Amino acid sequence: MKNPDDFNVKNVYAYKSSKDLKNYYNDWAKEYDKYTQDVNYILAHHVAKVASDFMPDETVTVLDIGCGTGIVGEKLFTYKPKSLIDGVDLSIEMINIAKLKIGYNNFYCQDLTLENKYIKEKYEFIISAGTFTLGHLGPEQLIESLDFLKINGKAIFSVKADHYENEKFYTALQLCVEKGIIENLEIKEINSYNSDYKALSKIITFTKI
Image (tube, rainbow, N blue to C red; front, side, top):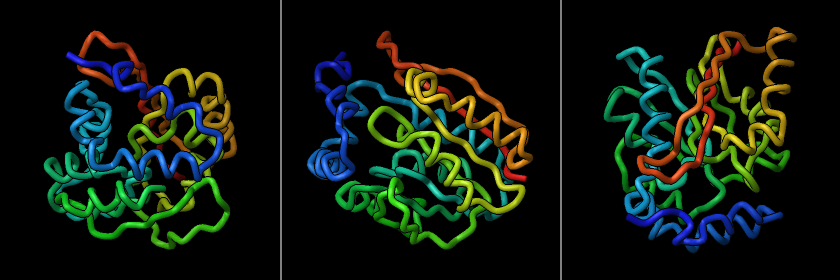
């Protein structure tokens, strides 16, 4: 079985600009789903399952941050087929793949590190798998994403474990708890791959107050 090192995936963590990152994912888009299968990358499935456990069976609105090729949204839709899922991603080519999958309604091609925000919808759930990682999004963007969430809405995010520690995600989240912005903060750690290859991620859930 192959692992991420066989594909030099660590290169993506070294990018310093959104433009370079966007170009990387645009080039990778058509092969990305095959890659996840080849290396047994299951983080998106973990996030989808955790999210589904919080969701009722009736219609709910969901924003998938860093939706990529739509793996997490498609999986979530199998659990909750009444959910209305929108996706936002930096890469238009990744979005074009996601458009071919079930579960999604609207897409935004947007760089969430920039100040100009085009998303006006307020969602009952926001989810994200694999986007809060090295060279991608940090705690500042996680906190800013609360703008997309309704009061009493639920957030379910994954954060790469070393990125979580190095960028002090916990400090930022605890400050939000202390300020009365979020509650019911829970954090657990899982392996992102269903293999001996170790790449730990935190799955973070909380409610917006």
